[in-house]
Image (cartoon, rainbow, N blue to C red; front, side):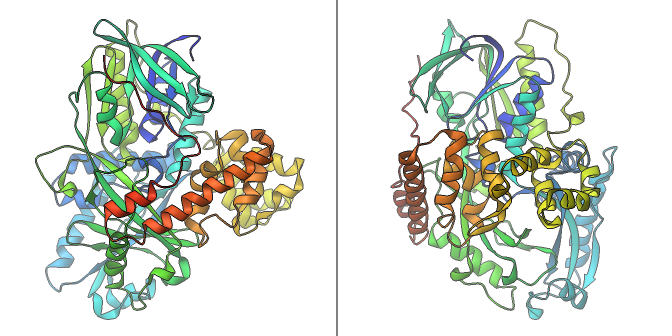
Length: 558
């Protein structure tokens, strides 16, 4: 990166930064992207993992935001990433006679209508009204006395971190240069104009300069921190809202459908997730450490209390396999209540050569990226085509459906069970051949991990050889979801996974030991933080776990 001049450098390797890199690269621009940690290590791996229009925004009369998000949902399901995004049903239990069914029914009908008024089909079934007895056949786990009937509707879900990795791989195929663990510590300036970034390679400790005509800040909740590097808070103010999620085994809640519940502040989802359920989320202001937001005992009890209000067999803390917390980057508003702050996005040009982007939601990342690159184009001395990412399938999407239809043949040829092939297809799409080639070269990689048998040993190696993973935590937390899908939270597979990574990453025995020790300290700190009563206590304990690759203190502004 230091050896050439770019049209644009993107700061931030979450879903928005990755989307910007792809949008710019597919317009023919020379693009570099740097991320201080692992890709999607912040908000973009800690969401509710839903691709949705935001049913609750209809109550706020924000029809345009919902329409835009539903259009993106349809594109992702049918054209851009059918291997990664799939439909998921939700049951909305009704608790009042007479008025609630027409009220909720009208809202869901409008939701469906907005989803088809986009020129393409919505990609999910329409809603339907259910009596209490029919709803109980779909969700026997519900307490009969907790509801009077239900409405079922459909949205979509995604593995958020895997989606980001795939976005970045796609951008790289169109020429983008991408680097993790490369922290921006300052800006290059020519007078008032930003002309690039100063970067610290956190793996090697080297400093370098990357020159570009335009720099885009897509750092989410770190937006204000980056703005300080150019001399002040700037035009965009972001406030962090913490949302936590619980993961419980699928057999703890007997249901064929997801569930959505009203809370006093927002909504609560019970989301199908393979052999698990994800339960979330909370919405509370967070002013502490942005890198590792901590879930407290109070957060966990809040979710358990609300979901248990409708379950015939209550969940306990012993049922919780995993807990994760993320921060929403909300645009700062007049309200003191984070649940009322805007989920819309804004693009600003605080100084020449710098574009700032903040706000928005995961589902509309592509629209945000388009708007950011449009702003970049205004600062370039060249003619640049418009965005085409609505027509660009992500890596693994091309040919996915044909391979899905041929999954029994793939299973027969590979010697794997068809359920394994389905798992691989829904993670890698048509790139499944790359995983199968690893197994063909080393049949031992076709065995499942001991202690996390949803995943094959080949997937651990593939994370390092093809997906940019540099450390054990990258693999157990983001390339796979072992850290939240097992009661041991990855500790039982850490040694085996680290030894598998040692080959492609050229680790010696000492580094393998170090990776396992750091991972164990992280898990221990998270568990202890989740026993604390307050955010402050939980944050202090979570910060006690050292980083395998610590970030550095940035420079301050000119």
